[in-house]
Image 1: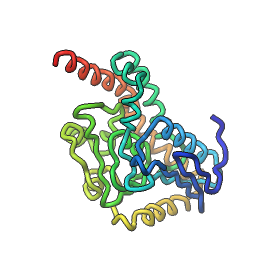
Image 2: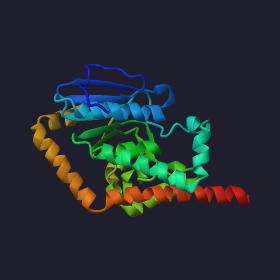
Image 3: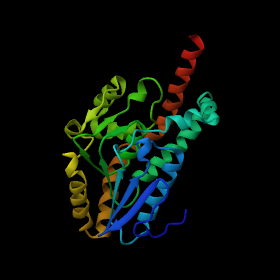
Length: 262
Protein backbone atom coordinates (compact mmCIF):
# COMPACT_ATOMS: atom_id res chain seq x y z
CA UNK A 1 0.00 0.00 0.00
CA UNK A 2 1.31 3.43 -0.92
CA UNK A 3 1.76 5.71 2.09
CA UNK A 4 0.35 9.14 1.42
CA UNK A 5 -0.29 12.40 3.22
CA UNK A 6 -3.37 12.79 5.38
CA UNK A 7 -5.80 15.38 4.12
CA UNK A 8 -7.07 18.01 6.56
CA UNK A 9 -10.49 16.62 7.39
CA UNK A 10 -10.40 13.68 4.95
CA UNK A 11 -13.55 11.57 5.31
CA UNK A 12 -13.82 7.96 4.21
CA UNK A 13 -17.06 6.04 4.44
CA UNK A 14 -16.23 4.24 7.69
CA UNK A 15 -13.28 6.17 9.14
CA UNK A 16 -13.03 9.93 9.60
CA UNK A 17 -9.48 11.25 9.62
CA UNK A 18 -8.21 14.73 10.51
CA UNK A 19 -4.95 16.39 11.62
CA UNK A 20 -4.33 19.36 13.89
CA UNK A 21 -1.18 20.53 15.70
CA UNK A 22 0.74 17.32 15.12
CA UNK A 23 -2.10 15.07 16.30
CA UNK A 24 -4.15 12.93 13.91
CA UNK A 25 -7.59 11.70 14.89
CA UNK A 26 -8.99 8.54 13.34
CA UNK A 27 -12.65 8.06 14.21
CA UNK A 28 -14.51 4.78 13.71
CA UNK A 29 -17.59 6.05 11.90
CA UNK A 30 -20.38 3.47 12.10
CA UNK A 31 -22.33 4.94 15.02
CA UNK A 32 -25.60 3.35 13.93
CA UNK A 33 -23.89 -0.07 14.40
CA UNK A 34 -22.00 0.95 17.56
CA UNK A 35 -18.91 0.94 15.31
CA UNK A 36 -19.07 -2.82 14.81
CA UNK A 37 -15.86 -3.85 13.09
CA UNK A 38 -16.59 -5.16 9.61
CA UNK A 39 -13.82 -6.23 7.26
CA UNK A 40 -14.33 -2.97 5.37
CA UNK A 41 -13.94 -0.85 8.49
CA UNK A 42 -10.74 -2.63 9.49
CA UNK A 43 -9.37 -2.18 5.96
CA UNK A 44 -10.14 1.56 5.97
CA UNK A 45 -8.71 2.01 9.46
CA UNK A 46 -5.50 0.23 8.52
CA UNK A 47 -5.15 2.45 5.46
CA UNK A 48 -5.84 5.58 7.55
CA UNK A 49 -3.24 4.65 10.16
CA UNK A 50 -0.66 3.90 7.50
CA UNK A 51 -1.30 7.34 5.98
CA UNK A 52 -0.65 9.00 9.32
CA UNK A 53 2.66 7.18 9.57
CA UNK A 54 3.73 8.74 6.26
CA UNK A 55 2.66 12.28 7.12
CA UNK A 56 5.54 14.32 8.54
CA UNK A 57 3.09 16.64 10.28
CA UNK A 58 1.67 13.80 12.39
CA UNK A 59 3.52 12.86 15.56
CA UNK A 60 0.72 11.14 17.51
CA UNK A 61 -2.53 9.42 16.55
CA UNK A 62 -5.73 9.34 18.61
CA UNK A 63 -8.22 6.58 17.83
CA UNK A 64 -11.83 6.83 18.97
CA UNK A 65 -15.38 5.89 18.03
CA UNK A 66 -18.31 8.04 16.93
CA UNK A 67 -21.62 7.89 18.74
CA UNK A 68 -22.43 5.96 21.90
CA UNK A 69 -19.51 3.51 21.97
CA UNK A 70 -15.91 2.97 20.99
CA UNK A 71 -16.87 -0.32 19.34
CA UNK A 72 -19.20 -3.20 20.13
CA UNK A 73 -16.72 -5.60 18.52
CA UNK A 74 -16.99 -7.76 15.43
CA UNK A 75 -19.83 -7.25 12.98
CA UNK A 76 -21.57 -10.49 13.94
CA UNK A 77 -24.45 -10.06 11.50
CA UNK A 78 -22.06 -9.71 8.55
CA UNK A 79 -20.20 -12.84 9.67
CA UNK A 80 -23.47 -14.78 10.03
CA UNK A 81 -24.39 -13.87 6.43
CA UNK A 82 -20.96 -14.86 5.10
CA UNK A 83 -21.00 -18.49 3.98
CA UNK A 84 -17.22 -18.53 3.48
CA UNK A 85 -16.81 -17.47 7.13
CA UNK A 86 -19.02 -20.35 8.32
CA UNK A 87 -17.21 -22.84 6.09
CA UNK A 88 -13.84 -21.70 7.37
CA UNK A 89 -14.82 -22.24 11.01
CA UNK A 90 -15.58 -25.87 10.20
CA UNK A 91 -12.15 -26.37 8.62
CA UNK A 92 -9.40 -26.15 11.23
CA UNK A 93 -6.43 -25.70 8.83
CA UNK A 94 -8.24 -22.94 6.89
CA UNK A 95 -9.38 -21.31 10.12
CA UNK A 96 -5.85 -21.31 11.53
CA UNK A 97 -4.26 -20.01 8.31
CA UNK A 98 -6.74 -17.15 8.05
CA UNK A 99 -6.31 -16.26 11.72
CA UNK A 100 -2.53 -16.22 11.38
CA UNK A 101 -2.90 -13.52 8.73
CA UNK A 102 -5.22 -11.58 11.04
CA UNK A 103 -2.70 -11.79 13.89
CA UNK A 104 0.06 -10.47 11.66
CA UNK A 105 -2.17 -7.49 10.81
CA UNK A 106 -2.66 -6.77 14.52
CA UNK A 107 1.07 -7.05 15.19
CA UNK A 108 1.82 -4.65 12.33
CA UNK A 109 -0.56 -2.14 13.89
CA UNK A 110 1.06 -2.67 17.29
CA UNK A 111 4.47 -1.99 15.74
CA UNK A 112 3.50 1.25 13.95
CA UNK A 113 6.35 3.69 14.52
CA UNK A 114 4.31 6.60 15.90
CA UNK A 115 2.37 6.44 19.19
CA UNK A 116 -1.33 5.62 19.02
CA UNK A 117 -3.69 6.55 21.87
CA UNK A 118 -7.07 4.85 22.24
CA UNK A 119 -9.85 7.10 23.51
CA UNK A 120 -12.52 4.72 24.82
CA UNK A 121 -16.10 5.45 25.85
CA UNK A 122 -19.08 3.15 26.12
CA UNK A 123 -18.64 -0.41 24.92
CA UNK A 124 -15.26 -1.85 23.96
CA UNK A 125 -16.13 -5.47 23.38
CA UNK A 126 -14.57 -8.54 21.82
CA UNK A 127 -12.61 -7.73 18.68
CA UNK A 128 -12.38 -4.07 19.69
CA UNK A 129 -10.04 -5.13 22.49
CA UNK A 130 -7.59 -6.50 19.94
CA UNK A 131 -7.56 -3.07 18.30
CA UNK A 132 -7.16 -1.24 21.62
CA UNK A 133 -4.42 -3.70 22.57
CA UNK A 134 -2.43 -2.45 19.57
CA UNK A 135 -2.50 1.09 20.97
CA UNK A 136 0.30 2.39 23.17
CA UNK A 137 -1.89 4.25 25.65
CA UNK A 138 -5.55 3.96 26.61
CA UNK A 139 -7.58 6.83 28.09
CA UNK A 140 -11.13 5.89 28.99
CA UNK A 141 -14.35 7.45 30.21
CA UNK A 142 -16.13 6.37 33.36
CA UNK A 143 -18.81 4.92 31.07
CA UNK A 144 -16.33 2.58 29.37
CA UNK A 145 -17.17 -1.13 29.43
CA UNK A 146 -14.31 -3.44 28.42
CA UNK A 147 -14.99 -7.12 27.97
CA UNK A 148 -14.90 -10.29 25.87
CA UNK A 149 -18.18 -12.02 26.74
CA UNK A 150 -18.06 -13.85 23.38
CA UNK A 151 -15.27 -16.12 24.63
CA UNK A 152 -17.74 -18.06 26.76
CA UNK A 153 -19.61 -19.34 23.71
CA UNK A 154 -18.51 -18.02 20.33
CA UNK A 155 -14.85 -17.16 19.79
CA UNK A 156 -11.44 -17.07 21.44
CA UNK A 157 -9.63 -13.99 20.16
CA UNK A 158 -6.11 -15.01 19.07
CA UNK A 159 -4.25 -12.15 20.76
CA UNK A 160 -6.59 -12.19 23.80
CA UNK A 161 -6.70 -8.43 23.30
CA UNK A 162 -3.06 -8.41 24.45
CA UNK A 163 -4.55 -8.56 27.95
CA UNK A 164 -1.92 -10.96 29.39
CA UNK A 165 0.69 -8.32 28.58
CA UNK A 166 -1.21 -5.57 30.39
CA UNK A 167 -3.17 -7.18 33.20
CA UNK A 168 -1.48 -10.55 33.70
CA UNK A 169 -2.52 -14.14 33.06
CA UNK A 170 -4.71 -14.62 36.14
CA UNK A 171 -6.85 -11.54 35.56
CA UNK A 172 -7.13 -12.31 31.83
CA UNK A 173 -8.36 -15.82 32.57
CA UNK A 174 -10.89 -14.54 35.09
CA UNK A 175 -12.35 -11.95 32.72
CA UNK A 176 -12.63 -14.08 29.60
CA UNK A 177 -14.08 -17.09 31.42
CA UNK A 178 -16.64 -15.16 33.45
CA UNK A 179 -17.46 -12.74 30.61
CA UNK A 180 -17.93 -9.87 33.03
CA UNK A 181 -17.36 -6.29 31.90
CA UNK A 182 -14.81 -3.88 33.38
CA UNK A 183 -15.79 -0.25 33.84
CA UNK A 184 -13.50 2.75 33.40
CA UNK A 185 -12.20 3.06 37.00
CA UNK A 186 -11.46 -0.67 37.23
CA UNK A 187 -9.75 -0.59 33.81
CA UNK A 188 -7.19 1.83 35.25
CA UNK A 189 -6.88 -0.17 38.47
CA UNK A 190 -5.99 -3.41 36.67
CA UNK A 191 -3.90 -1.85 33.88
CA UNK A 192 -6.19 -1.86 30.83
CA UNK A 193 -6.05 1.94 30.75
CA UNK A 194 -3.72 4.62 32.08
CA UNK A 195 -6.36 7.26 32.82
CA UNK A 196 -10.11 7.40 33.49
CA UNK A 197 -12.06 10.65 33.42
CA UNK A 198 -15.71 11.75 33.39
CA UNK A 199 -17.32 11.26 30.00
CA UNK A 200 -17.58 14.98 29.33
CA UNK A 201 -13.83 15.39 29.89
CA UNK A 202 -12.66 12.45 27.78
CA UNK A 203 -11.82 14.24 24.54
CA UNK A 204 -10.04 17.06 26.40
CA UNK A 205 -8.00 14.69 28.57
CA UNK A 206 -6.98 12.55 25.61
CA UNK A 207 -6.11 15.64 23.60
CA UNK A 208 -3.91 16.93 26.41
CA UNK A 209 -2.04 13.64 26.60
CA UNK A 210 -1.57 13.58 22.82
CA UNK A 211 -0.35 17.20 22.85
CA UNK A 212 2.26 16.37 25.48
CA UNK A 213 3.60 13.54 23.34
CA UNK A 214 3.53 15.75 20.24
CA UNK A 215 5.93 18.16 21.97
CA UNK A 216 8.68 15.52 21.88
CA UNK A 217 11.20 15.47 19.04
CA UNK A 218 9.60 13.11 16.49
CA UNK A 219 12.74 11.04 15.99
CA UNK A 220 13.16 10.50 19.71
CA UNK A 221 9.48 9.68 20.08
CA UNK A 222 9.73 6.95 17.42
CA UNK A 223 12.88 5.51 19.02
CA UNK A 224 11.27 5.50 22.46
CA UNK A 225 8.24 3.56 21.22
CA UNK A 226 10.51 1.10 19.41
CA UNK A 227 12.54 0.57 22.59
CA UNK A 228 9.42 -0.22 24.63
CA UNK A 229 8.09 -2.57 21.94
CA UNK A 230 11.47 -4.29 21.86
CA UNK A 231 11.03 -5.31 25.49
CA UNK A 232 7.57 -6.67 24.74
CA UNK A 233 8.72 -8.57 21.66
CA UNK A 234 11.79 -9.97 23.43
CA UNK A 235 9.56 -11.34 26.20
CA UNK A 236 7.95 -13.69 23.68
CA UNK A 237 4.53 -12.03 23.75
CA UNK A 238 4.43 -11.40 20.02
CA UNK A 239 5.14 -15.10 19.41
CA UNK A 240 2.40 -16.01 21.91
CA UNK A 241 -0.02 -13.89 19.89
CA UNK A 242 0.97 -15.79 16.74
CA UNK A 243 0.39 -19.12 18.48
CA UNK A 244 -3.06 -17.82 19.37
CA UNK A 245 -4.18 -18.74 15.84
CA UNK A 246 -3.88 -22.40 16.80
CA UNK A 247 -5.98 -22.01 19.94
CA UNK A 248 -8.52 -19.95 17.99
CA UNK A 249 -9.00 -22.84 15.53
CA UNK A 250 -9.08 -25.47 18.29
CA UNK A 251 -11.72 -23.46 20.13
CA UNK A 252 -14.00 -23.51 17.09
CA UNK A 253 -13.48 -27.26 16.63
CA UNK A 254 -14.66 -27.80 20.19
CA UNK A 255 -17.84 -25.96 19.32
CA UNK A 256 -18.32 -28.11 16.22
CA UNK A 257 -18.02 -31.29 18.32
CA UNK A 258 -20.60 -29.97 20.78
CA UNK A 259 -23.06 -29.38 17.95
CA UNK A 260 -22.49 -32.84 16.52
CA UNK A 261 -23.16 -34.58 19.84
CA UNK A 262 -26.16 -32.45 20.87
